[in-house]
Image 1 (tube, chains in turn blue, cyan):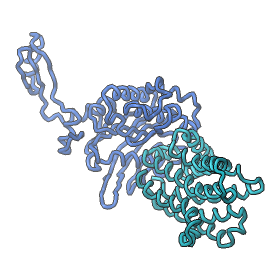
Image 2 (cartoon, rainbow over the protein chains, first blue to last red):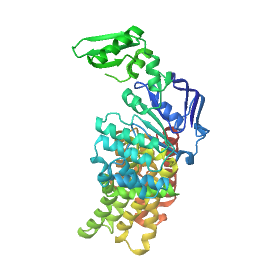
Image 3 (tube, each protein chain N blue to C red):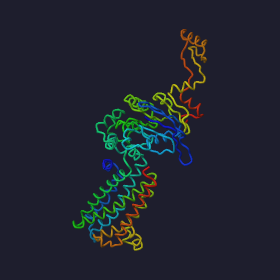
Image 4 (spheres, rainbow over the protein chains, first blue to last red):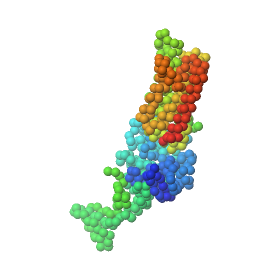
Length: 281
Length: 227
């Protein structure tokens, strides 16, 4: 559904994207992880045909991104971090504008608002919505015309955990319905929880790509098991036959409080590969 | 066409809620009605209608166009419209048509004091003036980065366009400069209610101003687009 091969982009003298290669299959949630300024939004703009690219190929729905027509655009839903809503309009009126543009029947407005949990706020002015509700209104706008591909640029950025969870649920529901989702985030938990594949983007280059669990296993350098005993003692055991038997004994004697393998999370993987943290402190 | 109508519909819905722009549309028509009916002193005939009409042309369409475009740019709703498939020209035609229609409605209110034979000429002059003013306002809205810059650019232009016809009545030097401004020529034409009163020079100034506004509009659009 989406395929990039050697995509390059520069602004003036600054190279923003260098040789981006990626492939996203139908019905997949693909996560692009990287710190601010890594080039995530630029890549979305290129794939969705909003921005010209200097080299390589970006194919979406079988077409080069630069050749997308208005009709193709209707199969794509985009929610960018900085996209606005009409503050003086109610939620319904905000969606009516886009229903008119897409030729979507007005009945879909109520459905979309219900889907994102804004049914009760339907007549509320957008200026009175919280940040989380505004994000959900943007999602409703994106979902309303049932696009095949969704691009969500940091959809939970700055939201409280409850709003984030609500948005995660909506994203998963769309995936179940067969939607392909391209998600950018610098929240590694979000990526791990939602994505089938993640690409780690740093300074315009993809430093690694794969399933989140796969990547974590790949960079498990320590290969140890940490055991916390009920006595308060901590043990770190390497992978060996002898330690396996020891762990078995500890479990059967009922002395184990917690047990963890040592594979890193995506944040640690990213740190190891780039020397940078995903989220700014 | 569907997208243009959607933009017009959106703007009409926004009219009542967007108070600063609404005031621009209503202020001079209401003032004309009040002044023409309430002030009973020795004044030239239809003095307020004629004076306020040129001020209306120089102020309402310009402020409305610049404010609407710059607000949509700053709040990134314009980008959402573009992403939804609305083309820049559709958006600009939609907004301009909406402003023009409302200004013509305002002009119709101002024309209620005029003898019926003068109304077509008055409306034609107002219609032409509003188009020039919309182009200048759109040019500012496109060129300015945000609403604050829009205000800084818009206010002096608006003051020159709307107040020069009035000031020209009291000062010859100002009149000499103001005669090159289209609002002054509209004032002159509306005073005599014929093209003859504006003369060839006046009609020429109208066309020259329209051409200049158009060139500036396309230059701003080419340089900045609607981003």
